[in-house]
Image (cartoon, rainbow, N blue to C red; front, top):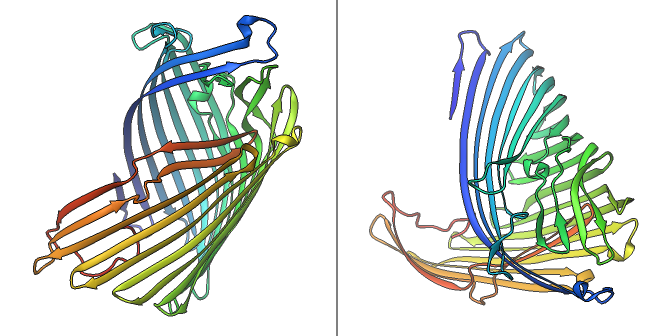
Length: 478
């Protein structure tokens, strides 16, 4: 909800906004593992089995509100004042059971906690605005109030309480310049302060992976970073060509990292801790221009990211260098209003190097190609098809996966005003769909593979009171 009010004095404005977001989720985790230790010194240590059933239930409610007041001082100077508030309430429950002992309850691994984070921020700034030049200098004071209660179970008494408050003062400098010929330049600096996630603060054990055990840290402090960014964009309405360039630099004075200890059986125990240092630099571009106006367009995008993150492993400082590069190229081919074709490709490279264990260095590759055709082949009859081919590689783990996803549909419009649409669609015709995510951060690498809804067919009937458009859509899906 947004409320705006303009006063009789020209330029004076007041605005109020508020929002509410709530969601809930539940799920079941069935964990099974069998580990054999060849260097064990006794029989009890040779084999370790895990059979665990977790039942999870989560609820979250977020309320946000903002106040803004603008007062003109002169024709070129403005005074701005603002206030931001949010409250984030979460309830997280996990009941853990021992599947190896008739599903008896794991009291030490079962937990239920309620957390509330209140955020207050008040500030003011001066803005200079004249002939397309806008420069703003401001200062804000903020406060995080965190309150958490830990229970042994949903209907158990409070086992532990946690109360934390964080205060900070953050400066902000921004400038936006409107140059000639639809050209814009922006330069910004700010000090970012981010409170630790409440889940990081809870001393709860997560043993979903018995070789990677995570616990919280109630002594965490906020993460602080200096951010400097530069943006440039230009658009030519005569040729529909554009160019966007951006670059961003972050330097951390206090960063939340996961320090680790690894024992003789290669079981890793980790928890979040504050550590000074770390930085990252990003640069990217988006370019598009017509080769044949309205018929053949080229789009090019690319970005590079270089980062450094310090962590401690068994008390030894490790420097992780993370270099990521992405390049994309696409063509939009529109020979007529009845035929639209798009072809695009993307290359992704992610190299991770560790200072104390070079054998763990990673080279992650994520590539893909996408082709689509939309054809109005007869009166009120449309064929739409798409092929998305993705490859995922990580030689360090011998991971090599190719995923071709092919979709196709035929639709027909009926009636004088095209109010009825009947569509027959086939999704994932090759029956290969999987959701794969590969990424690296600080001192760990994550590869996720999940089976999703694969091949299926759908016959749909749609009625639109205003009528369906009797033409192809240049953007978007079906």
